[in-house]
Image (cartoon, rainbow, N blue to C red; front, side):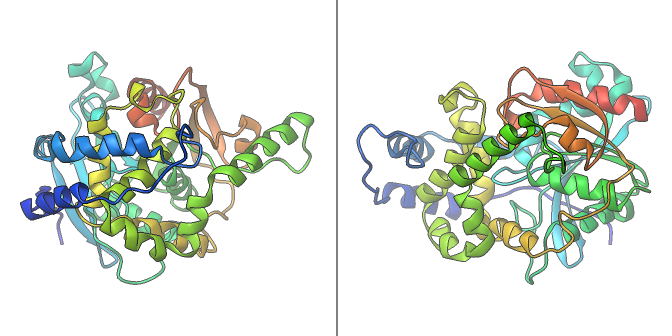
Length: 376
């Protein structure tokens, strides 16, 4: 059936209940002066939640989100929510932008105008894209899978179906970070007849079999980070529902879990609001709170760790471009990535971290335009 037009419309009762829960939060104690050392900085989260309850205006942001055409398509039994914005230019190139966790389609909001209508944003109309930005199954206002198995392989299949069967694009590009980077790589490998090129700001790749001292140093640093910072992933990949019961009940708990990741993974020098406003952080969080999707979103870890083909596939011939942001915790050297992908473009960015589309939209925009020009 054809795509169904959709608008985000959160019931007022959900907003009223949110404010009641925020007002009644029972806060944990914290060791004085520890800040973010033990996880979320409770003093900051208190301030953040007070702003959420008293000043944040969801309706204003909801209106901005609804300014772009959005739709639902039912694929493999799950409703996929997405923006679909046609480009203004001589020959717009179809481009699917894919987010990750704990992000949302909101990460790409500020890129929609420059990507689809570059002439109106100081660019060349020849760089126009038809942009499709789908919410991952179980995330935001997409439907929640009602059965196991929705890992990387199944999501990639659903997105290829969305782009080809639902929207009629037989050749298209993909771009993504975090899970979006993983799914984009999977699409490039599994659907080369449809994916003309993939641009990534997150690459999963291991070291070569014969390592140099520099490779060993990179691997040691990465292993230390994994041991120090990936407890969240281990929980969500093994026992996600034990944590989700608390997160679905407490907006403060949800905020602490998500905001800490933005603090740790961003190129912010310890000052989160030097990169993001509270409104940006909260609007992203609302994609988890309003539709109560934190549990179904976390399950992407559980399902993908049990997907035998999620990360195992032959090196694709599909051209791949990579933008490396210095604050990306999982960045890898180019020669590691070249063992995994057909790297045709590699950019070292001057600043930015894991959430590139929100942190440094202009830098990401420029690199996406540059990479895809050769495929028009």
